[in-house]
Length: 554
Image 1 (cartoon, one colour):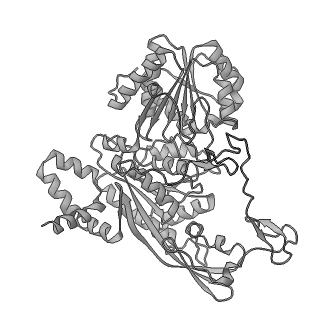
Image 2: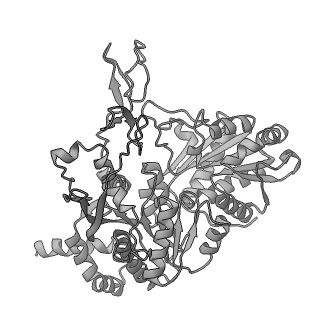
Image 3: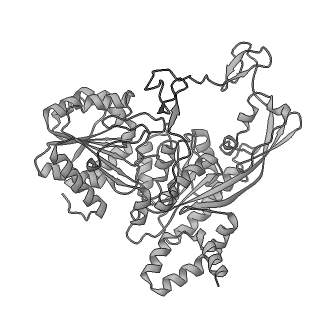
């Protein structure tokens, strides 16, 4: 066991957990802390104290991915001095191993009987990492509920406690708004904003990257598509089924563009986005030589395309990880311990994976949920040491959904900027007028069923039959729904940033970047600790707005 200096929140959380679990009112303790704040160390300390108090005999950790399982084994051993055996569904009779265990959520199903036996044989602490995976009535939730029903205690760890599909997770109660309703004495919460203010995590600057696409249809008509303006379709084009979906801005932003030779096009939208990321990484490496970048791609073809662009633009072949490459977890571990510049991932580095040196992220995901967004942000906010005053940068398409998520993340930085959601959490029963939860299937007062919205369909022009929106060909006559058009990139550029609750336009951002070095040098040379602390919190992009304020108040 190693003596470590806990962060104040970790020490307070560990004390609160011990008080709650020793009181015996409930065996579950919830740790809801921002990604990168140090939940793994905190949970390991709680486990060590329970062992020392002779309240448990063994520990089982469930984590989302094999990479995270390996991290748990290392950090748990660092804190407690105890080895943690990594098991899979193929392991038989784990109750006979006599060791602490660690497995992925997906492995729980295959080890159900053995994990039940462990909890019945020994007083067991179960640590559930990324608890949102355990949805009630989902396979992993059912498996966890069955495997750990007889566990003595459960530590529930999350940085994003609300599932985007609204489903509840096992062991915790929820209120009518879908929020976790666990007793305050049995919970510890540390928001992202608090973690940044306490310098546990790096603050994020969100940069919006605009693309202006020119689309030439087969009849010669041209359409402009961008992320900041609504696409204008003529009445005739509106009647063409599926055309508006095919020309969705985000879909175009995620579509690779190749040269006639088959090589990735170095003047494509994605190339423009990556070039900005490369330039920012070069800048960051002047102060943090180990800094690395992460590309979140929506699928394997786009990941391979982005990797080809990175090698072309940056001169170094990136590490690529997805479910079709050999040993992706080994590649992630090798990248973590190297000084390589870029890691390109498809659903492999989304949650729990700890690579402290990541500072830049190009964000082009498949999933567009807030849970996925917040998990991804957690990859670039980890501190790299006590002297780390770097910022994290996320470069994303000008996409309304992502910008809403970014503003909500930034609103956490200052309580005065928090706003209630404009989306109602209830709906009114048409029969009796009672207010019911928005996801209720029937009224909780009169039991009247709420109408179910029928799935959206499209009509085949050839035979008139209805088809799902996603259909490429008519299910009745086989007629194709495709459209012939030629897409070209008119322009690609950054259009400002979202940071510290501020929406900065591009002119302000460029002004801030232009005076950055002079501003920074002046503050550091002053030797004023308070000014230096403010410098760490304020992004360079905001320096232009500060300068304008000083000029206006002269």
